Image (cartoon, rainbow, N blue to C red; front, side, top):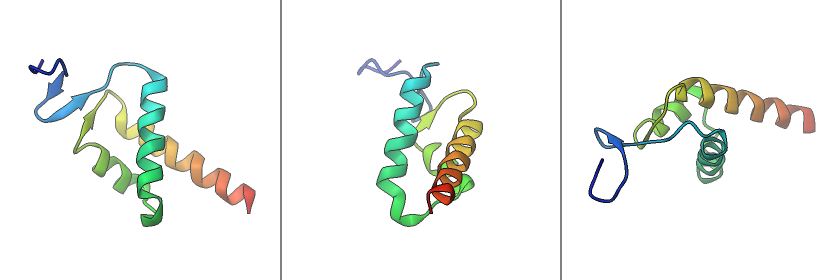
Length: 75
């Protein structure tokens, strides 16, 4: 626990088991990197520089899969 009250593992911010918080992080990350057209691995690699939560790789993979599946369905 840092002096700022934020729990970290090394320099990565630990995210609690809160589905809504995780969803918001994934959506905001996607919005800020949309022009880069990231794939699942790239999204996870970028996120893990800043954040940590149990199952993050799985969550990032599912988010990208669902997003691109929805995009293809809307075309």
